[in-house]
Image 1 (cartoon, rainbow, N blue to C red):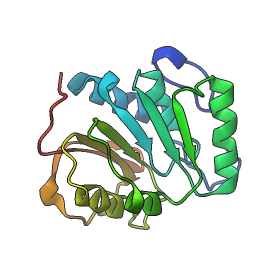
Image 2: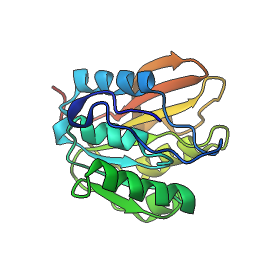
Image 3: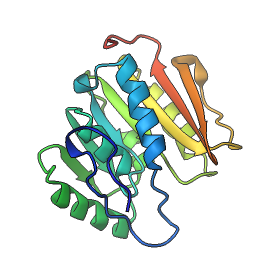
Image 4: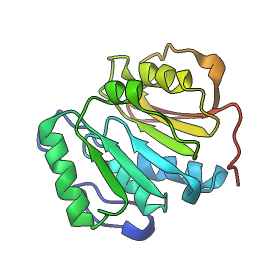
Length: 189
């Protein structure tokens, strides 16, 4: 079982569904992601959306690092049920909002708040979901958005890049982590 790497929930375990459908981000990957974000931004300013939540490992890590709250969006019923168990086990009911629906469908209907938002995208590899999500977010013209994308290292992202500042990339095993922010960013530390 994966563990939270740092913060208020450090070393707490995350229950993962069995099988190969869920590929939770590795502990060292999550640690790198949040160390990188924390060195550049004040995470307490952010609301988080774990868009293709799966096990919720990224979102729970974000809560542990002190973000305002996290919305977990997951369409698979078994994974959604697992998220509910984790929210209860980790006692983060006041910081977690669970939505049982498709991430892209939710994005098409969502209205991004004027508050700073951190999107965590770790969709199934090779389906183009991350690039579609980046384009859907950009269509709303938000000013304070950071997006972290975890993808297969041989997977290309084809999206409207003119809206985004790609400020970091890091390879981890079979994965590549990309960091983007809107070109106008106000909550840097």
